[in-house]
Image 1: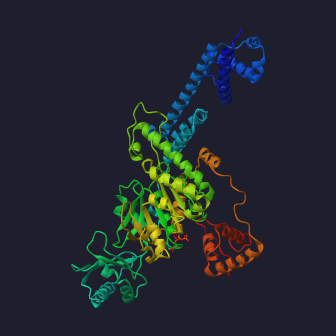
Image 2: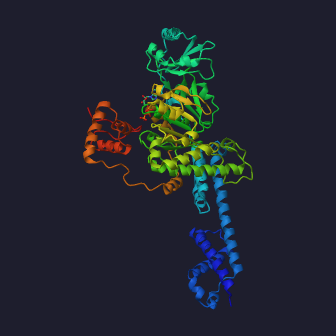
Image 3: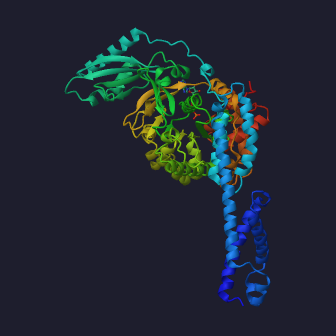
Length: 639
Ligand SMILES: Nc1ncnc2c1ncn2[C@@H]1O[C@H](COP(=O)(O)OP(=O)(O)OP(=O)(O)O)[C@@H](O)[C@H]1O
């Protein structure tokens, strides 16, 4: 007789074992020869038990207890033994997988060393050797024992191995600067005299000390006599502008760290700052920055480089046409000309579609350029998960940050699953406003979380917007983005939203910017570096010539699972009556201005992005516009 307690215990064990059997057999490990004879016996026994448990339930409970005995159920200790066998077997497989993965990773990483003893072995031979081993390893590695972390690590290894053939592009992608036009001495002299005369006419005791010329802006330094308030000089702003016939003057009262009041006026001979010139400066070539980005030149003509690792996140804002896209291009050009895909991963979000699509083939991309703002929260959520994963790994080896982790000496007892190094990860979001409109609260929370914690693990974000309003640049976002760039804006209010101070409304546009450095209380005026579309195209071609963008399928699937389902046909349908007139207006604008970008049409017609995109598509289908070329341009077939 089996008593009730025994029966209950047996049922409990059945349930556990049934789950175990199902899990284990579904992975097809049965076919693996590594299974021990004892465990195959156990499998048979357990399979039988699993089948028999299909009808063990309430019904069976009501049957006479003899029928349970008739089934010849394994004893409790047998079941426990079987369970232990399974566990052992499972651990054995998991260990095998780990050993194989680390072996694979090691081979990849040590490829140059492998080549060293025998110079007759070509890079290709070694690659083939490694690749021959890979499929077996990958098969084992993709068994259920491998969780998301292992998949991510596996992907890292592939990037690392691919990157061994990768060479960062040289300066040949970038155009030489045009001849520098010097500001005439007479203009400098005349300007200083005009300022001195204005000060004298208002009986302000101050002396014009010097005039320095940057590429776009000249700065006149005025030294007030003891007892003269700097605000007395600043008050004359409009008078100075009138006397100099200048559209705008920005006053620095005082120039940070100097005993002068500064007057910034437009230079009569503006010179573009070619990105190539900045790449040849010692500031760039000798920079110790972990993630250096060229920004431009200041009013004294010095090259200014930002270390994104110190920033550690960057906010860029300014009205349309002020130079944001060019700035993002210089930032990406800086990163792409310095780092291989194994050292840097990029996630680019471009709801405007045309701005960053040109980068679609660079091998640094973790996923295709993201155009759908609805996917952004899921992506940011994944970044947070990746951040946590990285923290756990760093903690496991006792590294405090990514720099220490990447340069650590690997100990013998280190878990073979630990990645050798982590690449920096930069996430660029061009047009935050579109994303805030779709999922403002989620985006804000995720961005704040990333901004607060991701620096130590090498994850950095750059966000840009042409709409510097408080509903886009919220208090939470601003608090987490102390490093900021403001381009020209239309009002003092916008300037305050970006920089918490006025000034950006007096900028000149076309790359004229105010840069607030990490930890800085004041902003510095810079002329942004200029990189042209052709240069970016060449750079991307160069980057993609050795390795193609290879998006991680597992990662993409992971994101697709998390992303909300995309609605079919995301573009707003055209409403015939209304849009016929919109179409006509768009045609007139394109004919007159010779510009056909979606964002331009959007601005000029004051309509939503989707509607503008529909109009441009319609114009393409009517043969008025050509198909989109790299860089977002289209041919215009209108006289
Ligand atoms: N650093 C620069 N030096 C010289 N000219 C520049 C610079 N930056 C921008 N410009 C000029 O200004 C134009 C507009 O720049 P850009 O496309 O970057 O503006 P934007 O702020 O991104 O505008 P939008 O938001 O409409 O895309 C460029 O086509 C270029 O002619």
